[in-house]
Image 1 (cartoon, rainbow, N blue to C red):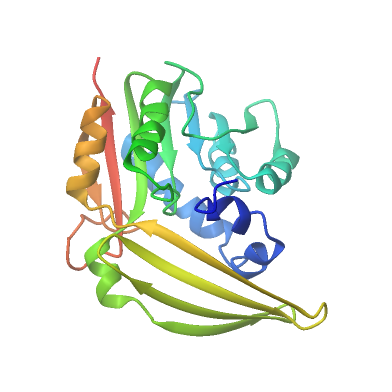
Image 2: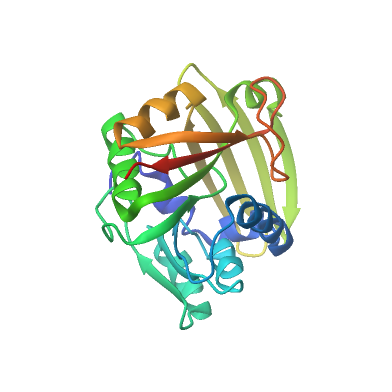
Amino acid sequence: MHADEWFKIWFSSPYYDILYKKRDKEEAERLIDALVNYLEIPQHSFILDAACGKGRHSVAFAAKGFDVTGIDICVAAITEAKKYESENLHFYLHDMRLPFYINYFNYAFNFFTSFGYFRTMREHNDAMRTIAQSLRPNGVFTIDYLNVDYTEKNLSPSDTIEADDVLFEIERWFDDAYFYKRINVTDKQKNIHESFTERVEKFTLKDFTNMLSLQGLQIENVFGDYDLHQYDEKESARMIIVAGKAH
């Protein structure tokens, strides 16, 4: 495993689940309700959830009757997600840099800044190509990413969280190209000390416009939060991009 593939290690750690366990179902369901209404997704549509994690968004889509497929590179996440599989909900261990189903899905989604992790621009373009190729003509891709300007201005340099007898000391910083988050873990019961560093590329709306365009996807709208208010480069916490695939 390449040293830069931090996401394979950190997302597979039990401490990742402890730190982020408050990401609740309600938030996922609220965003999905808003997107389903906005996109007017027809019943029985085929949906791809790229980098699905443990599948909370996939589960919410499937509950609405859509045929949903989730893919993720993390073995632990997919193992957990598979517990929810049903006739219209499927999960696969898959690296989104590699091709998946071709011309199969009506809609594809990438939630909660589950992009921008890779080492090179070529890898990011490979991932974008996988998603674009997976869509049928006139398919729609929605990506939910952080907003660089807002995140720079509002980044909290450090905080401490305690959960399940585990202490998380978190440091955040950025340079010209990336946002970083170092998580220092102290497990008091097991006497374990570990450190993980998240790194996310500072992709702007212009960057995404170029990446999407390269794969034949054109931006149709951009929202700034999970209630789908319009995007403002300075004020919006999120950058939720909706892009359509040409005929």
